[in-house]
Image (cartoon, rainbow, N blue to C red; front, side):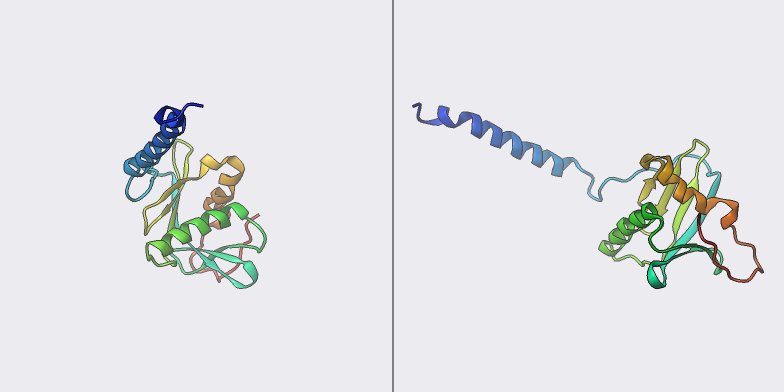
Length: 159
């Protein structure tokens, strides 16, 4: 049986490569984590929305520009929206940002749909998750969700 450094060379080489790979990941990644850039130009439609937890799992979606309730997400529905919001809420807590601050939902001329956290500046390209998931957010930009000033507050369930 061979003894000495040559016997351990394959394992030692593998360990050095693993440590080098981990070191390069930590040294080369951005300090604040990866961020997606907003598309250039002006969005076709954009709304600043707040998402508030209601009773029994209901999520109320409000326009930041108006105090009226714009939409309601019934309990046990819209799992993609809820998942995205949970992730963004966790990031806000980590950065000690207010949870009531609005998110900016925008549809762009090139077909992209983005959700931007106005406090952390995190941008999520929603179409990256497929058309079905993006459609959940896109419905929040449709005329059925628009606010008509002067009308009484009303709940509009998102289909």
